[in-house]
Image (cartoon, rainbow, N blue to C red; front, top):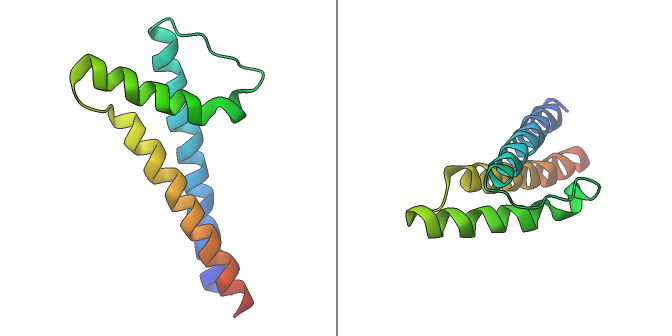
Length: 90
């Protein structure tokens, strides 16, 4: 029970991390004058993350740090969500 709650808290923190890093990526794309569709931003966010990765790689020769923040956060949320579901069933 307590383990499930712990995993759920980690998932909540990771989801907030995904939202913040996604918003920062969108902000960086807007600074570079890229068109952003705000009506369907949730569906388009993976596309924007890929676009951010491509642009920063072309500009600096390295992938921007926000890309890694987003990838790590979304994977953390996924792993701990699965762990919470499994631990609830035990």
